[in-house]
Image 1 (cartoon, rainbow, N blue to C red):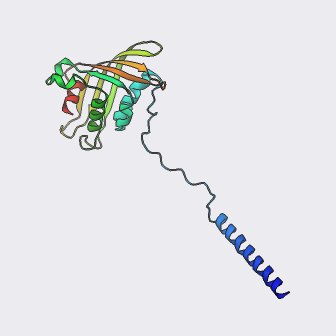
Image 2: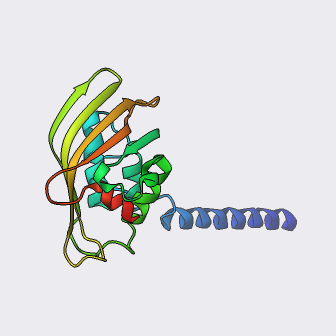
Image 3: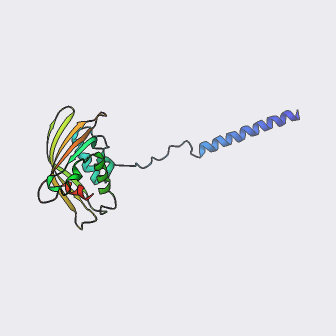
Amino acid sequence: MREKNLKYSIIRLVAALSLILVIGVIGCGIFETRDPEDPTGSQTTGDLSLTPEEVFTNLSASIAVRNPDLWISAFADSFNYIADPVAYENPALFDSWDWNDEDRFIRQLLSSDILTSGRLRSLVFEDVNNHQSADSAHYESTYRLNIPLITDNSDSLYTGTVELTMHRSDFGGWQITSWYDRAGGDAQSMSWLRIQF
């Protein structure tokens, strides 16, 4: 009888300890919802341009928020760049400018080693004209890029006219397949900027 009472006492003790453990776990907040984590990456609309106009928006946003991934997402793998002929100090440089060259250029341009911190960066497209079909588009626009480089005491201004050819990609977004750059006004074009990098 004594063994039976001892057995029941042990079972009750184990049950009581289990109950205390369960209450402790529930009470310590293990099942509570955590605070959301801060977002990482760009605070822009994303890297998929659902319209050709969003390509322009993402290009401008990538400069403002210094996001090379957002910039390069606007370009198709088959991209080619046609520089302003005035910028041809080294004609071979632009003979085969492609996606890889553009990726290298924008990563170097937007690196902290090149840009003056705390100064406004902007890329503005104006006077946009377009011809669009279901899966391709041709845009012509003037641009003004204001980007403060460490090597320059003032904001570096680049202006010109750009002709962009875009195609709808297999995943549904629009991407640039061709960028033809022409100088405009007294400032140098973005072709000159690419030469520096």
